[in-house]
Amino acid sequence: MMKNATVTGTDYKPYRFRDLGSAASFQARCIRPMRIMLGDDEMFWVVTPADAARLERQGFEYAE
Image (cartoon, rainbow, N blue to C red):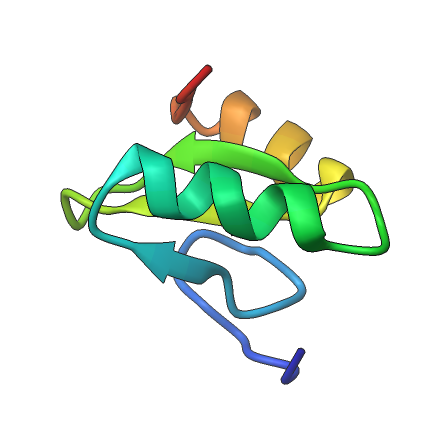
């Protein structure tokens, strides 16, 4: 993953998907644990658990 300073304060650039099925398929193939969040750009974001916790504190919701 590439380092990215974003407005949401995440450490890494999230992987973005248009549908939940694609995001879940990607998440299942990841070596490290990942979480799926509903992004503010009408897409599903796959992020690390630490980034998911930060996003949740900022008002984002888990997709699952």
